[in-house]
Length: 452
Image (cartoon, rainbow, N blue to C red; front, side, top):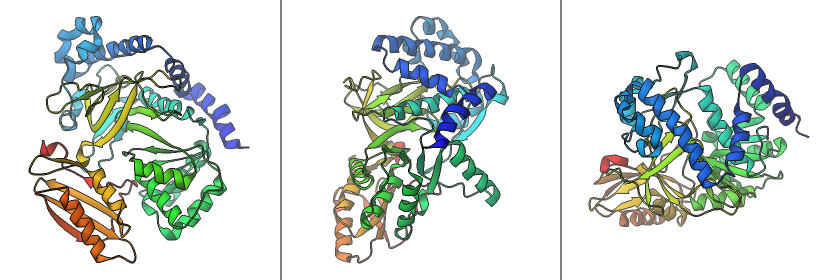
């Protein structure tokens, strides 16, 4: 019996509600009801939250006060009025961040946070407790579709708080284990010589699920298969987050872990935007956010079935609202319905980040996933990373496996080059390619909007 789980769910969360006013479980219960509402009811609920947000923005948020002439339009048709606000990119937000604070809400409510900044400048933003608790509730709703609850024991393949002192590190680990029922395995320190110890640690801990970056889960799974290791414990799921989950990664993780992979789609500065259900469909958190898929740079909405840039309006963040905030991801929506019983709309697929696209002088776009597919057929490639900073040139970093064959490596480079006509490829060979301190690993870093 998991006594920590019982403590968290029956004592800790109720106490947090009474003492600190934590409403995560309250929001969770509401979300479990709205997920079964009809599309008309969901739309009405969404419009009500949007109307309140937009009116708050034009009255109390300096950046949006110049749109106060839309007040009547907002009351009549909030979704139509939303389209009259400009799309907000991260650079504009960073340059004008002080103008996005809600002057009606006290500074004491602000909770500071940052995006990861794995390929560029970090973005500083603020939330309040209501925003954070809605994010958490949306995650627990998605996990509940797989039999996972707020107290369920878990292992996280994640970054480690390496900047903490030894004393603070112990406090951090204590809180993680006894107040959150989870332990962390540093995702940036996965090695063949340590994988047996990590697998033994997970088996002894007996988690209900493992949670981590797609690349970290994939790397862990590869090491397990190399060492011919299997978990003795039974996992409900491996939850992939924070990065694009590609089909070959899903297949590899499921084979090694002996459980299904669940895709979580969200952003630190936008919350949980979609979650994979038991039927394998990605349900959009439409009761928490409005997702638009647009063509860039025209700004026009693209039809279902076509890929486009994600633009998000977080319906719960009133302390620092960002309307029609462009995340930098590309997705495809669909009008299909799911058989699982949840009525939340569906996302067909997550194409990836727009900076995962490689460009050629002739205007050809090549997704970095293609390079990963090529690498799969060359076992001599242990790890690679392709970086493109200008259209005519790219750098291909290669970390070879033991027993490498130079001819096979040359063939890999040749095949990559064949798909990037006109692009000069600089090969950096033999150096170790590290994940970032957070544990994220980007095997393709393209130019993003710079090439558009």
